[in-house]
Length: 401
Image (cartoon, rainbow, N blue to C red; front, side, top):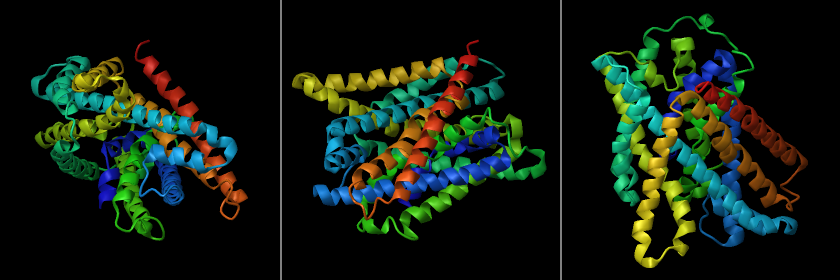
């Protein structure tokens, strides 16, 4: 349950637009393939973590510590990269979670704009709504203690569950025939499909804390195992939302499927409910970059000014996320950019690298096929990184030309 709850996020609402970029059947097959690769990468990351905990005699390790431990105990020629590996993972986590905060601001503003346009007959620039959203994200983003974010997390889960339920109700209410949608939408938009899929499915940051908190962590992996069971249901839900969402709305599918929901009273309630989910999640996502950055800054801050500097850091990050959201207020290409640059790196780059370094000298484990398999995953990551970022940036540039 905790695995599903931790991995199920608002990224599921971007699945239909991912299917729009790939085509109905191409996207379904592609989503399943990406899902299998994702689960495998989580497997090798968790297994590497368990082995490194034994080597280092540590009860548990976070993501950055796993990378550090892999290089520290790996081949001697790679040990000089130990500090860099830890720093690289920290920076990737910071960038990923912070860009998600920006996506959340854009998403909330887009939903508010739709509701206001319907009810008041006005058509104001989305940047005005981004300014309004600032009023709400400021108090949430300034909360320092995680225990005070627990109620917001609960509200977010309830709101997202309600929103997804109603979206699926509307989707199944008037489905056109499957033949009405193209099976493949061309190679030009395919990179955006893969980067959006990776963004939508990325929950790798929640996996290690859940595994570390288990009384029997050995039951996390294996067959069927906690990971396999939970990811099977998550993948089925994500594919269903993407497949039927795109089938229902076709070329009109928006960056978040809630923006396609009808203008009925219930439809507007759903948009506001999902916006509430995103707002409540903002504080949790901001927590990661704040803590990583503060860990680096704190040693250089006078003790008497630590509180002021800490909240100044939070305030700067909140206001900067609003400014970046106003610069790129289009949800679809921005989600693709986050997926291509950040989510793909966390999911497809770090796990195979960590496995290679951790087990390089273990000839019984590191067979030739494992090396080839990891190199293929890294090649897939590089393909998504280059083509996905290029396509997303091109679409963002189109907004200003």
